Image (cartoon, rainbow, N blue to C red; front, side, top):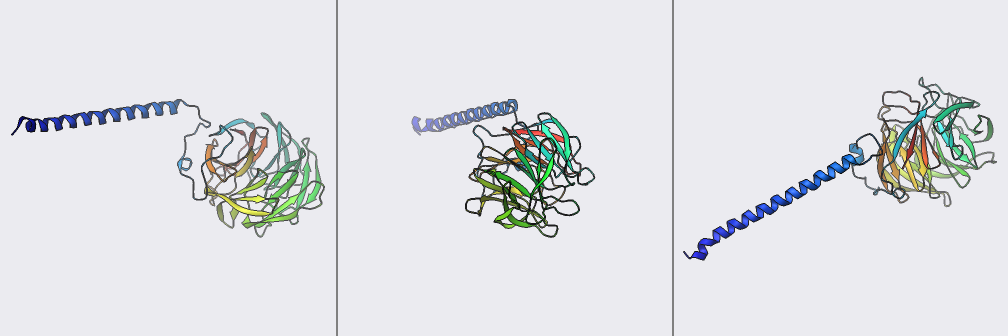
Length: 355
């Protein structure tokens, strides 16, 4: 055997040792980078005191895309800022100006309808008056600085449209075509759009339109299916309708209603069936807050953001799972009030959501 042939196994062994050293070095670099990333993640501020849930980490379902949020926003911060005069669920809320909102009616801890008008301003809340009748599961919207309450239920459903002032005065302002509760509403360019609801016998698929001064709301559109307890907010000149209940089932559908054409189209799908959630807009993003599935005790703490192109993303958590809370946009934040937890407890928390 030649000397060059005898050195060949030695050269191959040396190459193998060099490859092993390079691989070991690469692993060490990767481990070091992972350690630095983990330390930075622990040190970075978070918009919530809660860890991400499996639902937040899950990829978006078919029909939904990645996030579309206000510029620079990837998470939202939820802060406890005060307490209501009493625990309440299923109340209606609407902005009453740049600094405050009104919280109207609802159910108390004993599931009894209340007639309270509560002013929310900054860190304070106090009752300023009473509604003509106790009511829950109504909808509220502001038009031209005036708050209006639509429908609702107690022992029977109501068709009333009531104007409510910040100082607690209430007066009749119009009517719905038929009595309804479990509805939701949003305002675009001085017109209120009232979505779905429940007559006491059946859920509704109607979309109504009403402007102050009109005697009655009129039908301007139809949902693909009857819905109650949907989450509704305005976005870029359209109405977004997310989730809700049909019969005993909760929905994953997100619809977009175009008031100009009267058409309803599928915009996206939620990551899971959702009903009894709250909704409000900041800029071009609609935030869907809390809610539950078909099970009355399946409340979630998740906050979802829906972008104008149908993107859906989880962006934060409530301090605890809640459904049936009220939401209103006030300036550059969303005010959240009350709600129901998975144990059936009714809450008096006053929260704010900010990007």
